[in-house]
Length: 120
Image (cartoon, one colour):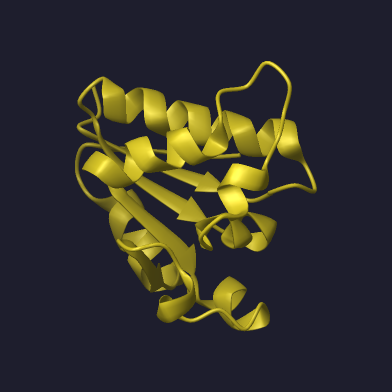
């Protein structure tokens, strides 16, 4: 069994079901005690801005803000460097504990021993 799960969310409100799946899987893994690294790319980058996850609404889905808090409580949340730059986001714009990092860090995390990566 993988000891770390890397989940990359590639959508936000533009594809809400796919987005919610990524957050649900990441939060479920975190609740099960798995080390989780959630990467927010593309439109999901906005969800790291305070208040944005609370605005996300998808019927029959757990509240995104709660899922994000669960991952932040025990894992790592990262916004893609290029995605942040395209949206004029800096670390000061993001929730406490969310970092900005690039492809080299993503690749390093994914290629580490005992890692399973999923992309939504």
